[in-house]
Image 1: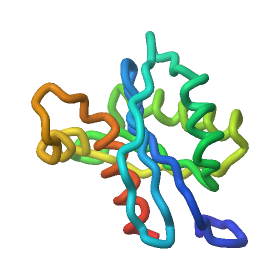
Image 2 (image 1 turned 180 degrees about the vertical axis):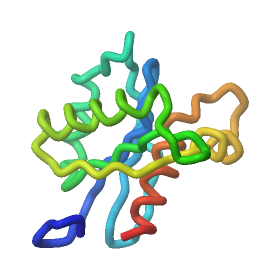
Image 3 (image 1 turned 120 degrees about the horizontal axis):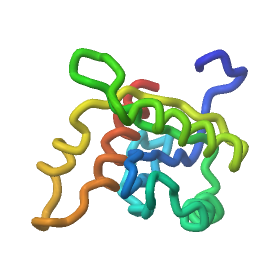
Image 4 (image 1 turned 60 degrees about the vertical axis):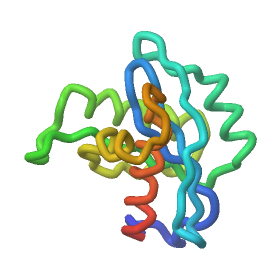
Amino acid sequence: MQGMDKPIEGVIIGFDFGLKRIGVAIGQTITRTATPEAIVASKDGKPDWEHITRLFEEWKPSAIVVGLPMRLNGEEQALTQPARKFGQRLSGRYQRPVFYIEEQLSSIEAEQRKTKARQPVDDHAAQIILENWLDAL
Protein backbone atom coordinates (compact mmCIF):
# COMPACT_ATOMS: atom_id res chain seq x y z
CA MET A 1 0.00 0.00 0.00
CA GLN A 2 1.41 3.36 -1.04
CA GLY A 3 4.88 1.95 -1.62
CA MET A 4 5.12 0.19 1.73
CA ASP A 5 6.46 -3.34 2.08
CA LYS A 6 3.65 -4.60 4.28
CA PRO A 7 0.07 -3.41 4.57
CA ILE A 8 -1.00 -1.29 7.50
CA GLU A 9 -2.74 -3.39 10.14
CA GLY A 10 -4.23 -2.85 13.57
CA VAL A 11 -5.33 0.33 15.25
CA ILE A 12 -5.40 3.53 13.19
CA ILE A 13 -5.88 7.03 14.60
CA GLY A 14 -7.72 9.56 12.44
CA PHE A 15 -7.83 13.34 12.68
CA ASP A 16 -10.20 16.04 11.47
CA PHE A 17 -7.94 19.09 11.71
CA GLY A 18 -9.28 22.46 12.74
CA LEU A 19 -7.74 25.65 14.12
CA LYS A 20 -9.90 25.54 17.29
CA ARG A 21 -10.81 21.87 17.62
CA ILE A 22 -9.30 18.68 16.24
CA GLY A 23 -11.56 15.66 16.01
CA VAL A 24 -10.03 12.29 16.77
CA ALA A 25 -11.34 8.84 15.90
CA ILE A 26 -9.94 5.37 16.45
CA GLY A 27 -10.27 2.71 13.78
CA GLN A 28 -9.40 -0.92 13.26
CA THR A 29 -8.21 -2.44 9.98
CA ILE A 30 -9.64 -5.90 10.74
CA THR A 31 -13.25 -4.72 11.10
CA ARG A 32 -12.70 -1.58 8.98
CA THR A 33 -14.74 0.41 11.48
CA ALA A 34 -14.04 3.62 13.37
CA THR A 35 -15.49 5.28 16.44
CA PRO A 36 -15.34 8.89 17.62
CA GLU A 37 -12.76 9.17 20.41
CA ALA A 38 -11.99 12.76 21.43
CA ILE A 39 -11.97 16.43 20.58
CA VAL A 40 -8.57 18.00 21.14
CA ALA A 41 -8.41 21.72 21.84
CA SER A 42 -6.29 23.86 19.57
CA LYS A 43 -5.41 27.44 20.38
CA ASP A 44 -4.41 29.71 17.50
CA GLY A 45 -3.75 26.58 15.44
CA LYS A 46 -1.48 25.05 18.11
CA PRO A 47 -2.82 21.63 19.17
CA ASP A 48 -2.87 20.37 22.74
CA TRP A 49 0.05 17.98 22.17
CA GLU A 50 -0.22 16.54 25.70
CA HIS A 51 -3.76 15.36 24.95
CA ILE A 52 -2.66 13.89 21.60
CA THR A 53 0.29 12.14 23.28
CA ARG A 54 -2.06 10.54 25.82
CA LEU A 55 -4.20 9.22 22.94
CA PHE A 56 -1.11 7.72 21.26
CA GLU A 57 0.00 6.13 24.54
CA GLU A 58 -3.46 4.68 25.15
CA TRP A 59 -4.20 3.35 21.65
CA LYS A 60 -0.68 2.70 20.24
CA PRO A 61 -1.83 3.20 16.64
CA SER A 62 0.18 1.73 13.78
CA ALA A 63 -0.69 4.59 11.42
CA ILE A 64 -2.22 8.07 11.25
CA VAL A 65 -4.90 9.34 8.88
CA VAL A 66 -5.45 13.08 8.45
CA GLY A 67 -8.34 14.53 6.49
CA LEU A 68 -7.28 17.17 3.96
CA PRO A 69 -10.05 19.74 3.62
CA MET A 70 -10.70 20.37 -0.06
CA ARG A 71 -13.16 22.45 -2.03
CA LEU A 72 -15.92 20.55 -3.80
CA ASN A 73 -14.12 21.08 -7.10
CA GLY A 74 -11.04 19.34 -5.65
CA GLU A 75 -8.96 22.50 -5.20
CA GLU A 76 -7.09 23.23 -2.00
CA GLN A 77 -8.63 25.64 0.47
CA ALA A 78 -7.30 27.71 3.39
CA LEU A 79 -7.06 24.75 5.80
CA THR A 80 -5.46 22.27 3.38
CA GLN A 81 -1.83 23.28 4.03
CA PRO A 82 -2.21 23.63 7.84
CA ALA A 83 -3.78 20.14 7.90
CA ARG A 84 -0.88 18.75 5.85
CA LYS A 85 1.62 20.43 8.20
CA PHE A 86 -0.24 18.96 11.20
CA GLY A 87 0.12 15.49 9.65
CA GLN A 88 3.85 16.02 9.15
CA ARG A 89 4.21 17.06 12.80
CA LEU A 90 2.27 13.98 13.94
CA SER A 91 4.57 11.75 11.89
CA GLY A 92 7.68 13.42 13.29
CA ARG A 93 6.52 13.29 16.91
CA TYR A 94 5.07 9.80 16.98
CA GLN A 95 7.13 8.03 14.29
CA ARG A 96 4.14 6.54 12.47
CA PRO A 97 3.27 6.67 8.76
CA VAL A 98 0.74 9.37 7.88
CA PHE A 99 -1.88 8.96 5.19
CA TYR A 100 -3.93 11.86 3.88
CA ILE A 101 -7.41 11.53 2.51
CA GLU A 102 -9.21 14.33 0.74
CA GLU A 103 -12.36 15.25 2.57
CA GLN A 104 -15.27 17.42 1.71
CA LEU A 105 -18.44 17.75 3.71
CA SER A 106 -17.43 15.38 6.55
CA SER A 107 -18.53 18.01 9.09
CA ILE A 108 -21.92 18.34 7.39
CA GLU A 109 -22.36 14.54 7.36
CA ALA A 110 -21.29 14.42 11.01
CA GLU A 111 -23.83 17.14 11.84
CA GLN A 112 -26.55 14.94 10.33
CA ARG A 113 -25.41 11.90 12.38
CA LYS A 114 -25.21 13.57 15.78
CA THR A 115 -27.80 13.07 18.45
CA LYS A 116 -27.68 16.24 20.55
CA ALA A 117 -28.06 19.81 19.33
CA ARG A 118 -25.03 22.08 19.82
CA GLN A 119 -22.78 19.10 20.38
CA PRO A 120 -19.40 19.54 18.63
CA VAL A 121 -19.09 17.16 15.69
CA ASP A 122 -15.32 17.16 15.18
CA ASP A 123 -14.84 13.63 16.54
CA HIS A 124 -17.67 12.35 14.34
CA ALA A 125 -16.12 14.08 11.32
CA ALA A 126 -12.84 12.30 12.16
CA GLN A 127 -14.79 9.02 12.31
CA ILE A 128 -16.18 9.64 8.80
CA ILE A 129 -12.71 10.51 7.46
CA LEU A 130 -11.23 7.36 8.98
CA GLU A 131 -14.10 5.15 7.77
CA ASN A 132 -13.63 6.47 4.24
CA TRP A 133 -9.91 5.67 4.41
CA LEU A 134 -10.56 2.17 5.79
CA ASP A 135 -13.17 1.55 3.06
CA ALA A 136 -10.51 2.38 0.46
CA LEU A 137 -8.03 -0.21 1.83
